[in-house]
Length: 413
Image (cartoon, rainbow, N blue to C red; front, side, top):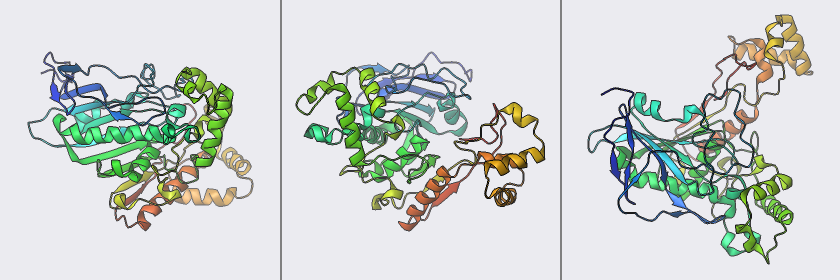
């Protein structure tokens, strides 16, 4: 066997819905674009119907429709953002190390970021699960689901059929987690040893799954990477404001309660443009209602998740407001940096510099200008809620590794 060549013989697994055929690359079986749900626009997802024969799972499935134009990040290293978009985007991907019959490997479920409005399971090359499966001997699963106006437009004022349209994006994740729970053993995974992990908006989605009883039994622990929702760092929409936003969007489209059926016919781009006129896409988020009790730090941690271990993280230089270029920083002396910081923090620069040197003695003093407390406060508030609920396994992580690149001094996850 050549370690990094696709094998001619292709693996077949039998799920509860039917058989899937994947590919084998080295010592990892790969299954991509596996449908886990279907849904009418703005409606709750439903499990897919069983099929006969064998379905090929050789290629990526479509990703969620994107409300903003795709714009690769400065550190972007791949072509994964060039994916087909569709409202029917409920699919997942599995990288599973080869294993003996009956073997049960740990399962790591990756939930992508991009707030609740953008991103996808392949937008960064690091989201490819092969290396985790190959080197970590862990089954890696990534999920695509509905986003932005398709996932979180609260139309509850327009008819009973839209009772939970503001939360269908996280409802997709609930169905995906149940699919994983029911089927991962066929791929060699242990359904009783599942870790869910997400970064940025994906971290907020991890928090959502902790709060939803229909999902809580499908995982044992979670990791929130720079995405905690706690009233700071990342916005959380309210039920009343979401209803107001929906009215404004439908006014742009000329749709009322009397002709609400037209909402199914509006092309996505027209719907997204109306949303951009009426609201900030970054404000899309799940809505607190009878289905979703709200984020833990803003309400309370649900009792059925109080025993689950969790890690909350934030990063030293998240969302920095410092505008110095790499060239400007390169020629700065220590005195220049101190003078800059005194202008950047006009009232407490000296006190902050003293505290920063004590906390991060190996860092350049200018790194202080890149600190952001919003996500750190949200992580700490959220962790405290778990402690108060009786969780005995709560951790805070704060990476502060410095990698100079394109003018950045301290990395984000």
